[in-house]
Length: 107
Image 1: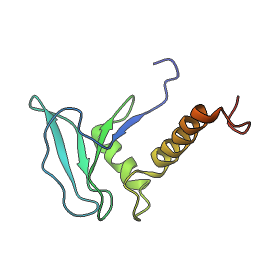
Image 2 (image 1 turned 90 degrees about the vertical axis):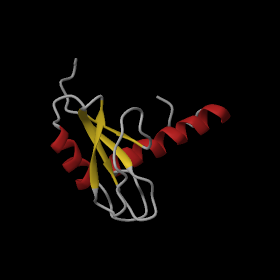
Image 3 (image 1 turned 180 degrees about the vertical axis):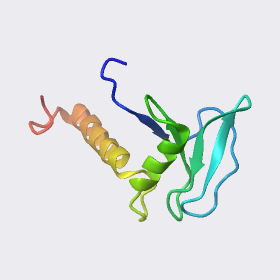
Image 4 (image 1 turned 135 degrees about the horizontal axis):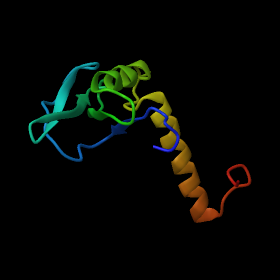
């Protein structure tokens, strides 16, 4: 990795693997693929589908779950705060691309 920055993965959908479905907020179950644990399925908020949490660069399985839980607001949002803010920003940019970028978002 060029930057050497620790990373983790958060997804709204399982890309591969199987896991038990957590039912209560805060509950997490191992996500396994071909007999190896690759992440967790985490119920992040009541009324929301579970999210997938996995390690990236320089982050362990356990640390990825701890970090995801640390940045959950405990409200109605299913994504941890940094991921939610990035998601909102990207959607704003996508909307700007269809209308022409706003001066606030132009680099």
